Image (cartoon, rainbow, N blue to C red; front, side):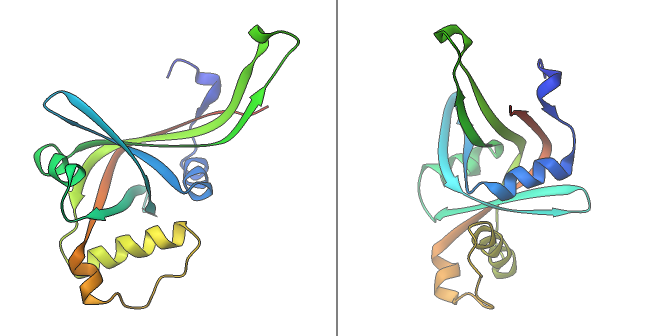
Length: 157
């Protein structure tokens, strides 16, 4: 990271940023062409390992790309605030962000899908059901980004 003074080295602080936000951007690539999609997410932080969950339809470009190339990047940012000065060249921006990379996996079992959907709902501030209807699990694709690297950066005045 070029700006070491803005680097977040604490995993707890990175997790706090994930908790404060509800929308992230999933970056994928197929045949050298990038694809980025904003989506809601949930996550688990257990034993120093982070997994990010998201969902979607059981057909579509996101699913097709993940099947062919599971390498993925996920980005979250927040705490945005414009900083102005006496002239335009003094303008800056407050922010905090997290970038994670890893392999995206399609969750297959009902248990894994339920876990992912529950984490997503919890991150949105919604209490998940004790059991998901089979019809919901059957029609919903749930994905898990198994995080290999995760970094954070902030510029807050």
